[in-house]
Image 1 (cartoon, rainbow, N blue to C red):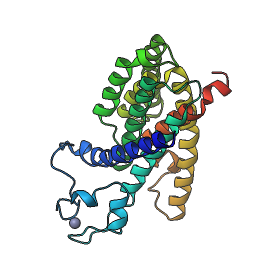
Image 2: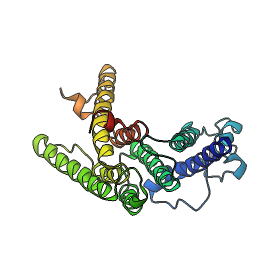
Image 3: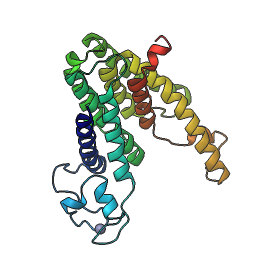
Image 4: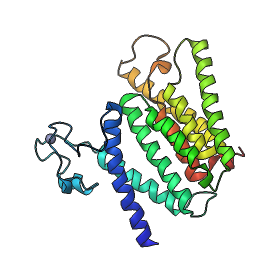
Length: 264
Ligand SMILES: [Zn+2]
């Protein structure tokens, strides 16, 4: 058990390190395999021993050896977050025993979720590679899901996508503004394909509550600093990416099975 836990954590750290590359390069349409890691400031290649997850960052004390540019603490954070979620999913999730294939599926969803979160934070987009790609992987592996039937996953992915699509359309008709990005709509399909109807409901519920709270806090904060540009509806105009909240809702469902508590 201990040896396996260490193995899972190491796997999470290594894949988290790979996610940092994906998060940086995928939105720029760069290859994620070649060339190897480089300093974003001076473009110098990073030696392999400085590229060891978390430890490399600590050895370098958060600075590039070549140019001294600060390396964002987000790199080790993403590595640790991935390792932590991998380990949590390995220890067992509500409604599932430890089944190798299901485990693998859940890890893929965790990787997609982390990449979506940080790419959306940086660029306000969710790339099709992650949303439609994730949707496809979720459906192709749905037979290996021991917690949901395959048909539930197919139905939930279509329903989640359809619901968000119609909601976005309605919102735009009523308010004249784009409320939901296309990426968010597509990503609902991914959530349904991995987590079923419970995932859809929890994701919508938790993301709208947490998104509203954070949106209000940010609006209040920027109003205090006099940053809201014109208009009494500063709250609605504060642009916050919605993807991270959808991922948060999906992960809460994954780890705590919230939809079952409230009888959904
Ligand atoms: Zn550098």
